[in-house]
Image 1 (cartoon, rainbow, N blue to C red):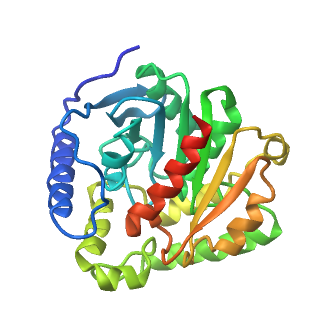
Image 2 (image 1 turned 90 degrees about the vertical axis):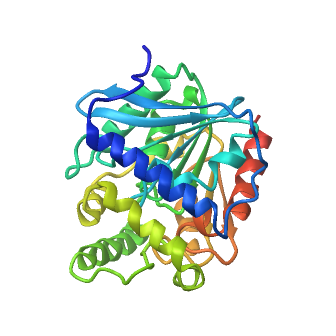
Image 3 (image 1 turned 60 degrees about the vertical axis):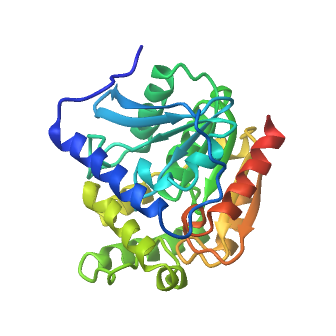
Length: 307
């Protein structure tokens, strides 16, 4: 099965072009990861047809052991712009826009984690990638964990970044219910310019352009946050599967993450076999975006040990 190099939808092509322009501008400003300059890094992009989803957009860059980056609710494939140049220096990096997040098509209301996993399988099959390290940020953690539990033979390592990943007990469920209530209230009380629930407020104050850029990502087309949060809350990871996990797993969490606080991430990690936790100092819910080098250092150290 080969990928589809393009799609006829004019809206999709405009979305991609806007992403490129916005992120090119961001990279010209401050705060960009200290990625080595590479003039020979391979890059491709396209769409893969997935069951019941229409087209799933992907990008692939670099060569070497494969790693997949799965975005959270506030982003899409482009949100990884600070990580792809660095990680692709020695690895094949695949980013996707999950179904419902432009330029991908598909369901935007009743999100089903099993379907998201199926989309990822379709992309990896199309790219002829048999095995990869899977990294899921926030909402993406649900997809990443379920992929690893369902396809352990295809998962070389698992990184769950600032997420519960569907690991619920009474303690984590109580906190998640409060997160869901906050998501509902945001529809009526959107944050001011440059601020986003997924970003630490101190980061937004110090980096207003980057905060605004993050806000813009969701304007290209994405599900309503309250709908996604509610749907994910209905999808628990299997307790039995969690206890039998053998995929080496790392939880990463920002020190100031208010959505999934370190103490609770530490707690849910005890419910997943073969896992450990690293805390990123001075970061909120999105260390990959707020403190990109610190995040990449932790990721590369973990993945290097798995290679």
